[in-house]
Length: 287
Picture (cartoon, rainbow, N blue to C red):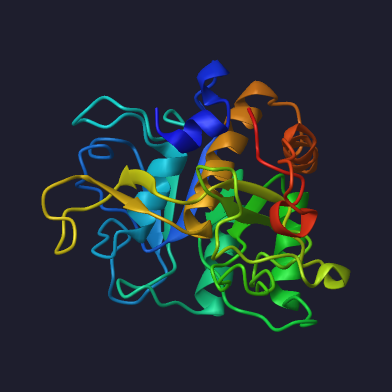
């Protein structure tokens, strides 16, 4: 089991996310990857001329693996959290990793209409100190919660600690979007992880998860020629840890609303000694 899964206490869980819909909003999914080939996966592209089921970039496939992968075919080591969840894909970032607010909003709207329970957004746009959240994301985040759906988003990688960190990025800085910070294997804040510097406008970190040297599924390409797996770091990697674990909560507590699941996430989180609320929120998410 990879270190990130151990940190969440996943070895103690009997749940696999069965029956829960997780939508990854990212660069798409490499459907030919052996860990996803043959699975019944629904998807849609919001990038003109690019398919959701191809991912030359690799970022989306990596995030999908953390949330819904299972075990590595090469060594049997578990790297994914909710292997029996229903994986959904919204391609909102191009093969070059670029996207627009409008494509993300359109994809969220599509996912809410489809009644997906978890939307995982490993994407972030920088904001300034004291900058207010986007009304667009505030509105659609609140709508998601009212429709029994949780949006989880990366806090952003703009910091270079120990220098003063940057504020939580958009859309994670919206009050109705769960913001995820990153920690490393030594239980320290990842040097790149943004912080809750705009709390008066909702820009807090809500929760933290493993985000350094995370191994997950990845397409074979120019930088990863000989393996179906690859190590990456970022709040992008922390985010699907939270999304996958929430799927386990939703399987375990099917009667709970999205708002109640949100509260459960924060209640069960484990504080980390010496780390500040502004950096890790309520703490490290736990099963």
